Length: 91
Image (cartoon, rainbow, N blue to C red; front, top):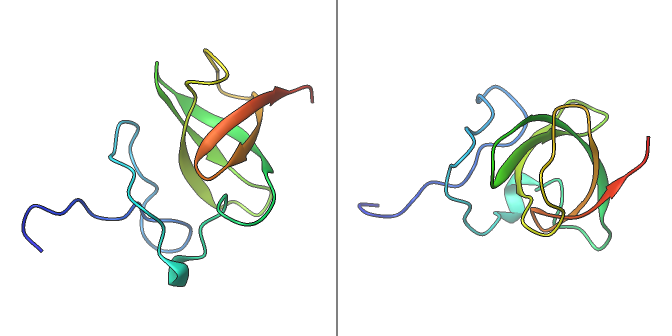
């Protein structure tokens, strides 16, 4: 598809997405980490001013928007839903 941005890769053999990668709608087949019915806790692996690459307890990674929680740093624990950090959690 020319002009369409690719979906972010999730866990598995594909490398995790880079910070600043455009986020498209999730594919049901991909099993998006944060698009279930509940928010999940994810640990920040890497962050920039707008996004954070986060990892769940099984090692799957996803880039999430951090606009609502402010600056984050590696090691922070975030409550995330639909690729958006909703709150910083205390570890």
